[in-house]
Length: 188
Image 1 (tube, rainbow, N blue to C red):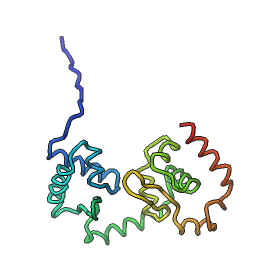
Image 2 (cartoon, rainbow, N blue to C red):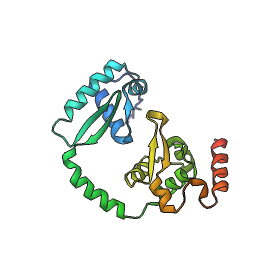
Image 3 (cartoon, rainbow, N blue to C red):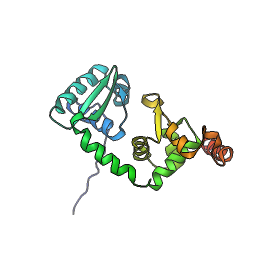
Image 4 (cartoon, helix red, strand yellow):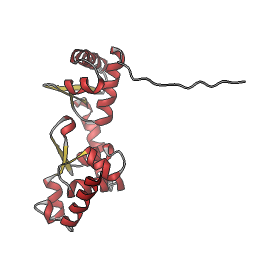
């Protein structure tokens, strides 16, 4: 008789070598910047451990296309400048494509609720919005304000100009749509 065992995952403090790869995965997947203290809190680690993991990660990226970028206490991942020409070509091709349905829905939420957080957008859409938000930012249609978990999304002036309005409240059915969004968010 074959017995199957169940694997039970128990959260635990991460060893230093796993901490750096965990930070790498967070920075890569979210495409956001994080503060050292924010990463420490998120990962239940000390700021010193996060600093050591970031140093390890920075060394790891030597000679690779990615690099760790730091400004003050904030850190993010970026591609090295020498790859900008090929990436610009890819971006231009991507910008010429139509928006996906997911990106169009995300854009509508940001346009009708300027200052929406990622969590609010995901609550309204019911799915992860990371890819759509990133795609819209690359196209220059939305921009962020704030940092860390306090990031909010706003339509760019170029987008409003494209729509032929000087402010969002001039959009079609603005008041009704905002009321529906507000009702939905208040229900949750």
